[in-house]
Length: 265
Image (cartoon, rainbow, N blue to C red; front, side, top):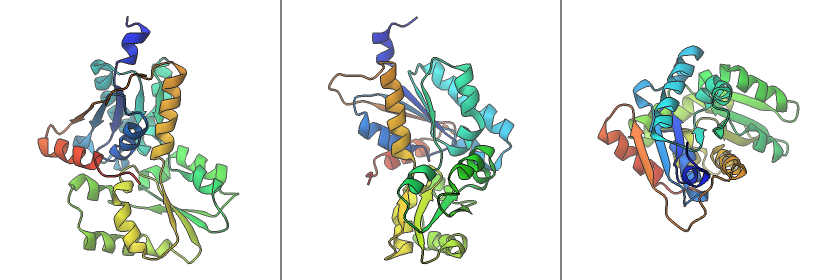
């Protein structure tokens, strides 16, 4: 049994169905620079969003068990699909472990909304999930919120080679039908999508449409929960990030570190 001092020195665990959760990890590293992190990307089974809920839950639990064996003091489920399918049961099974999930940033979009429309770009599975539909119901009487299913968009990041022209074609086909002059905010409702933000901004041109995601909010909530249990490291040090990928491929590890080092706006 570890004492509090030993627990503080443990890393924080992150899991995702692939590389998207690195967008959340970037924020966590920025606001908790003294902490160590272990990130497990399950790219071997990506995408989770095309699978049935029970399989998603099993895959999520398999990854979490691997992280627990490594020794972690907190957990971020940095995947919308895995959050919807598994976070409630994870909290039930591991009540002493601070656990946060991620959900599309609809709440902050609505809180800062004026009169325009809010588009939520998300995987088809996320949009179908009960948790997402409940989130919509909570806020759709306060703003016009439209879900945009983006099948195949996360794969641009997983491939690691983003062709701007190909991506523009994707946005033209999948996003343009939902855009209008009064589109005020686009919520990036998948953790992969923040890596595509520069391309999306370029596609939107001079549009005043805001782009937001849940990375910072999730990281702040993780920090708060760790702080509640007095598990944050207080010394002046630079933390370490270890990345594991279920494919075992070094190129996926290298790509993960490159994504992690991209600047945060």
